Length: 465
Image (tube, rainbow, N blue to C red; front, side):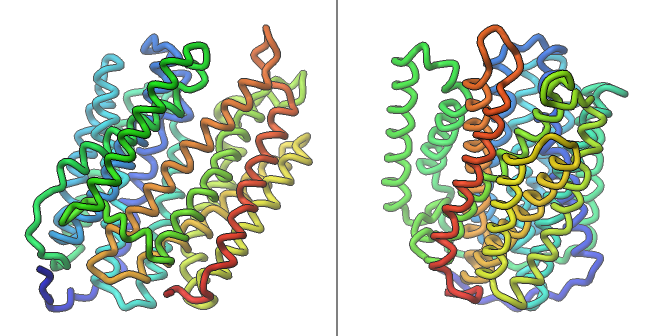
C-alpha cells in the first residue's frame, strides 16, 4: 500500500550542483569507449565482433538498470538508491581501468552500465525537494550537464588514451564520479519513499527484460555480419520476439512490475517515448557520421583530421548540448513542452538536411553538428521534463526511466543503421565509403526526425495531459 509522507526538506543550489556534478562525471564515463574503440581493438587484439560487443554492452546494462533504478528510487527513496548505484559504477570504472584483457573490460562495462540509472533517480530527488516550477529548471540543468559530460568524455577520451594510456581514460572520470557521489551523499538530504507497497523485485520480468535487451543489441550489433548466416540471424530474431512477447505478458500480469507498461497508455508518457526514439535515431546519425566524415582522407572529399582535431571541431556541439538542457527547462515552464519540442525537431531537421547538402568545408560540419546537438538537448529534456511532471510523484522514476530506456534504444538503432549505410556504400576493395553514403545517412535521419512532427501535433500545449 502507498502511505503519505511528510514533505522532503527543500534544497539549495549546492545540492543541485552536486547532482549536476554527478551528471557530468557519469556522462563522461559513459562516453569514453566509442571514440577509442579502434585503439582498444588494437591493444586488446579484438575481432570486429568483439569490438561490436564491447560498444553495446554498456547500453544493454544501462537500458536494463534504468527502469529498475527508477522503481527502486520511488520505493525506497532516491538518495539511498543513487548512492548505492554509484558504488557499483565506481567499482566498474576501476575494473575497466585496471582490465588486462577483454573479458575483464567487459565485466567493468557491465558494472558501469548502472550509471544510466542515475538520471531518473536525480529527477526523483529534484521533484521531492523543489517546487514544481524550480524542479523543471533543475531537471533541465541536470539533463543538460549529463549530455555535456558525455560530449566532454568523447572529446577527451582520445587524447587521454593516446597521451597517457587507455587505463587513465577510465580512471579519471571514475575518480570524478567518486567525488561527485561523496558530494551528493553529504549535501543532499534524504527523501522519503513514495511507494511503500512492500512488494518484492519482479524477477521473472527482470530476466525476460534482460533477454529482450541483450538479444536486441546482438541483432543490431551483429546483424550485418550475420547476413551470410541467415539461419543464425533468423534464430536471433525469433528469440527476440519470444523474449519480448514473454516479457510483455509477464509485466501485464505482475502485481508490482519493475517496468509498469500501463504507463505507456498515458498520453504524456507514451508520446514522449515515441518522440524520444525518433529524435534519438536522428541525433545518432550526426553523432556517428560527422566524425567519420572529418576522418575521410583529404585527397578525396574529406579532411583527414586527427583525433585531436576532431575533438576540437566537435567542441561547439558539446557546448550547444550542455546549454540545451537549461534552455529547454525554462522554455517548457514558459511556453509549454509542445512549443519546445516543435522548435527542436525543426532545428534538427534543418541541421541534418544542411549536412547532407553542404559538407565541403569544416565549418559546414561544425555548424550542422552543433545545431543537431542543441536540438537533441531541447527535445529530450522537454520530453523528460514533460513526463516527470505529468505523473504522480511516486511514479516519477518509472515514467522517466521508460523515456531514458527509449533514448538508449533509439541511439543504438540509429548508430547501427547509419553504420550499415556506410558499409553498404563502401566500394569493394576500398576502406572509404562513397560520399553518397554520407548524404543518404543524413537524409534518412532528417526524414525520421520529420516524422516526429506527426506525434508532436497531438501533444497538448502544456506539460500535463
